[in-house]
Length: 150
Image (cartoon, rainbow, N blue to C red):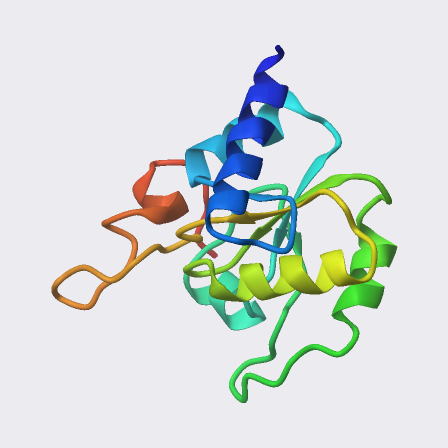
């Protein structure tokens, strides 16, 4: 079994265990490895423009807001943008701050026929630490994966 198949199998099993309606769920390190091994995999960062500007972003990610800032209004053209910007049949790895908006994006994409949707658990910043700060306990940043700050 190839490493790509192993990563997807683990993500799919995790997805079944937690009852996801989409293909599966990846830890940040798994998502990064999959992106490096599979040229057809696309990381879609669904955070807001403000988050990309102020917090940072992952090089090479497709930026597509799930909700707008500051009102939090859902981006009604999200699925149309996904169709325009991500090749059909691609493995789509959705990322947000902590894993909630990316979960919703994966559900929405799956509901209209996308079959290779995965949520990146813990998100870009991860859970809050005891002091209420993100980026230290888990998530993309805490795992030491590549990112840049504006």
